[in-house]
Figure 1 (cartoon, rainbow, N blue to C red):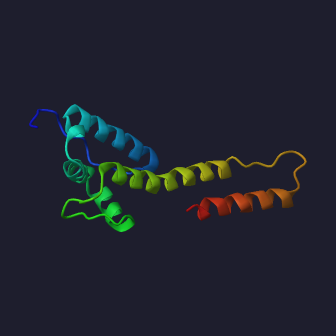
Figure 2: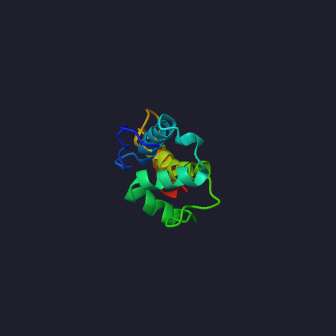
Figure 3: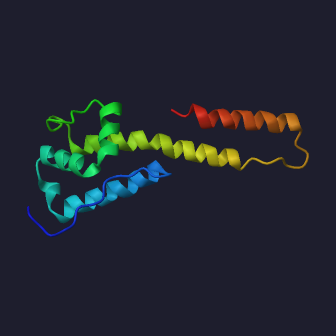
Length: 131
């Protein structure tokens, strides 16, 4: 399946890993479709994913998932790999939202300082307790 289409850039988490993952995944799916790899065997698709993903995703997959990285992820479909990354990066999405909600807190008129402190403590805990 030779072509002149440039490869997609390797994944870079940046400051918002969840959003970066969504964009990289879409680019990868478009790349597969454009080169007609979407019809290729699963082993070819997972190998191509591993090849294009870059070191950051390879290390994440090695640490976070029980997937083989050297001999082709036999028995694992590309869809399973992408779903594992979706779950992994969802944590970052939730953390960013919890942090945003925490930073939104302000003392309204009539709020007792003790109540404000309790709200801030519970939201702060939510920022750190996301799993």
